[in-house]
Image (cartoon, rainbow, N blue to C red; front, side, top):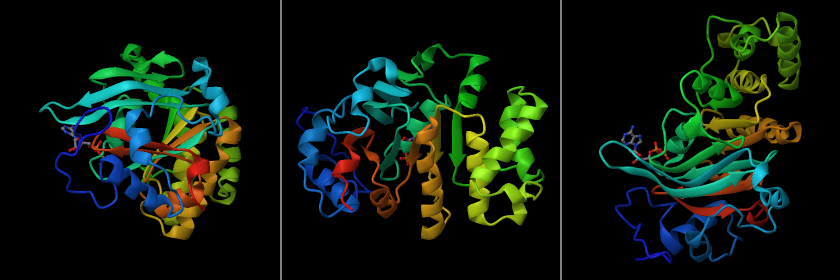
Length: 295
Ligand code: ADP
């Protein structure tokens, strides 16, 4: 089978039930997100999930100004030692105040994409541009500074279990050298927003799984990052808690933080009605706008 660009990506496909490549795969992925979505996804998206594909996208006007993106992947490929191509020619752009999801089968390249944003890995080709700075130029002491500028939320939240909630949330500000008085004010304010104002002295082990994840989010946003990335943040939560956490993420764009969430919880993605990027064997095979997601 060949894609319109003339490249064969069918390959071995052990995880193909939801995310099969090419036309069929794109339709299947689309069905996974909403039966009502009827678009020739394969044809359109295989050709070019380029930077500005959706004239009706909620933030499309911003994307037309190349100076306005928070994050941009320009034809990014990543080949690991040993030759495996985890990402192939991936391009997309995230506007200020935009929330989007990245999904795809296991091994599709989702973690690699996050690692490139977080500078845990470097691209083999192409450029990752954060806040109009090519990350290739971020080296040495600038790397931890960059990591602090991108908030990160993990499935296992990675809290310090012997420190109080307030201390956990304060950590990024302490590392950044924020003044003490400011730290306690900001920690209190962000914990209030997460509905945890009354638990600031508790230890993480005294909190429920959903509350622990909210502490993880508080810690990630206390520094007011331009971008928050989350790796399967609701993977360990039941559907109600997952929806609660997603609602908290959805509030962040209005406060100036763009949000990129990796998730393969398709029912949840469908309910959220946000932009969805679909990775398939390292390729960005679809970039679905909220308007194209069915109820
Ligand atoms: P996902 O997060 O979607 O499951 P990954 O980004 O973890 O996908 O992996 C994409 C592909 O790259 C997989 O085939 C994986 O085996 C491979 N891969 C990931 N990390 C490495 C690595 N450090 N070295 C070699 N191959 C890797």
